[in-house]
Length: 334
Image (cartoon, rainbow, N blue to C red; front, side):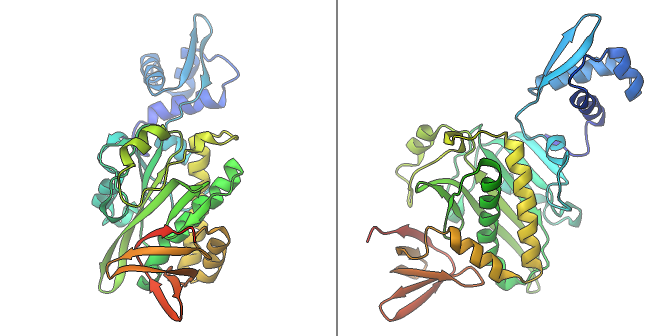
């Protein structure tokens, strides 16, 4: 596990190599500038190479960084991140049962507001309604701890708003326009590319903290995941961002998502819900469709008219109007 506070020597060496990547730097130069021993420089460079960075070493010339790692290490996330809170603390795991489980353990500490737990892979990834989320290497699997100011009544809007933030980030980085499927999925050509879930802790009728879980199929084996999930309920296909024409690094998407999420989080904190509902509706694949929902009270069919300001889906069935806060949805062809 790596976090934003450990490994200051390694980060110093790496940052210096990154900012001087057009030239070779001798071990003595690095030692003198960074005020650490040459042995320490050598050890840090070996570790940097193990982490997936390419560092060339030439006798009499020194070291030169020629490519960065694609892993979402804390120092990569915080470097140049233009947020006030979200992502300014980061914890990275090579493998974990669930980033959501880890975040929930940490969520009670006020010092962890905005902290991100991220993993290269999850062995027990969590989806909505207790479902399994297949989380191999190549995806972006993370959870964010938040201590919001907004009222408990709009907690159900938060995952919808978060999906909108990710959609905005994908538009800005990959130049694509994914559709938003109620309540919190992102789809490309009708197949799921990302999803959200939220765990909320309440105290005296107020939100103590909440944890947003985010799963993004960034560069995954679609056929392998579909083979695992094909028989599961409400399965409607898997998409991967690697199938898109434009290519970006994972860090570009993650940093942009954090910026967009913080913007929308502030809209919620200042009760500007109408703007979120309007923007989500423009991108929705659900509104205007005939749908079927499995809810705790049974199946409900009808036409999806809109979402309310608390994120509830409004369904019209002849003269009857239903408001659905939670449920599994199927888009019907007719």
